[in-house]
Amino acid sequence: MTTGTCLFDGTGTSADERRHFLEALALSPVSRLLEAVNGSTGCPDESLDAVLCIDAIAQIPDRAAALADWARSLKPGGRVLYTDPSIVAGLVTSDELAMRSSMGFFVFSPQGENEFLIEAAGLRLLRADDATDTIALAAAHLRTDRARDEGDLVAVEGRGRYDARQRFLDVVHRLASERR
Image (cartoon, rainbow, N blue to C red; front, side, top):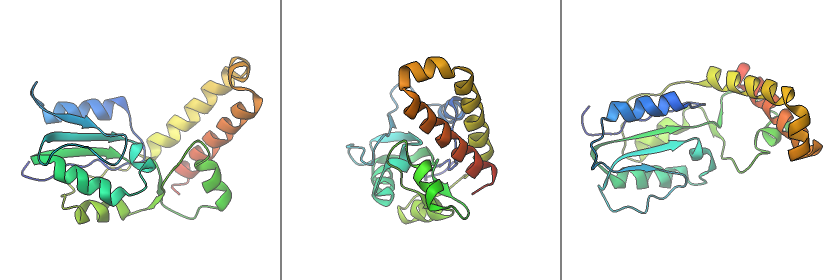
């Protein structure tokens, strides 16, 4: 690949996706990879070979500034992989949004916004994948697993937190399954 940035833009992530990205980079032992959990790298210009941000982009209030900072910090030919679990792709009620964001702070984005912000930051999008089906499946499996262990989880979490988490997973599954 030439100078630019490879971005993965999906609605779900997995350890396999991360491993494939790192393998594709074929980073040398002296390469610098930043796993971003907030918007600022704190790194000098052109000092990073790659930036990896798994789902944390949804918690960054100023996504445009984060992408610009990542672009500034990347060496020529550097790459970025980020996954976005908070893309709104259809009509969503206020109750669904409230439940979807009940587990913490989220910045929701409309379809196409990531691609716009990537270009605005001076990066070049090489790949965008839709992993909505993956998130629907993961939410369904997690909800089922938690239901199987309900007694133990209620003892640790309390009834209210357990029920809230199950409702959260229901909404995540429904929104993803309905591609909203």
